[in-house]
Image 1 (cartoon, rainbow, N blue to C red):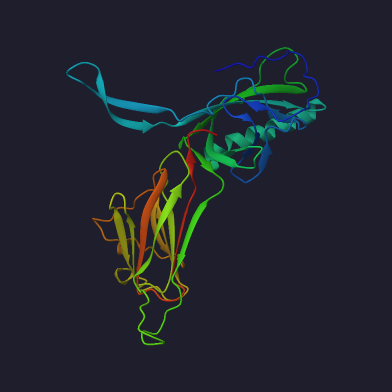
Image 2 (tube, rainbow, N blue to C red):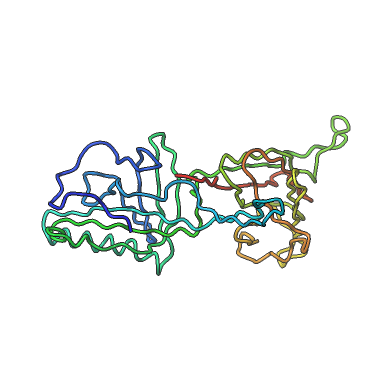
Length: 317
């Protein structure tokens, strides 16, 4: 466990700019506990704040490489597996007297350790530009005082270890793509015309992140069947509403398809996963960069729409 190099006496009253986080730079960091309570971690005027010395685990994702020996020497890479991330986070806590210090120390301890019972907390890093990246964290260990002379009275520090099952940082701002069927036209008025009841649109989706994302799709009726195709790989899946307990989508009705975790739900909560074209359905992800995709709705009319949403994922904060 890394140790904090700091004075053994009571620290001076802090002040100045945001804390510089190694591998991150100057940033504002907030911890959000499972109840939604926000704990600013870089406010140097607060009774608790991050100690920059000793922060680690904010850089690139750790990977495990699987290789096979090569007969001519060396090895060949067979598989790359992202590993859970560990973040080391030193925190100083202080108070005007022992009672205030103890109360704050206990509140912060509960805010982190409750992630083991109530679900993960979230660590947010906001840049001066306003962009924010998040990562879900679980408390692992480290909420213990320094055990040195003069600590534990009106101030003390802890070196937290936070465990992240998903090692990638997630952009707080989601990317959305909306496609909607326009007004239908009469075939003979004012001259022979066609309006599509099939293909809602071909478009290029841009993933600005560093790794694949697994999107969520929301379809608004009318629609009887929905097909989504990733043009680069040819992967696709079709949701046939007639094969579900719901039946075809009527105007204004919705169904949401989540690709991770796999879930298909109507707007009223019905499980419609049976409507997917198993076993050939592939609920594909979107790689970094630009990806051509096609949304096709059978039985589409004015108001039929598809909304694609995902949050880019990054190697670093």
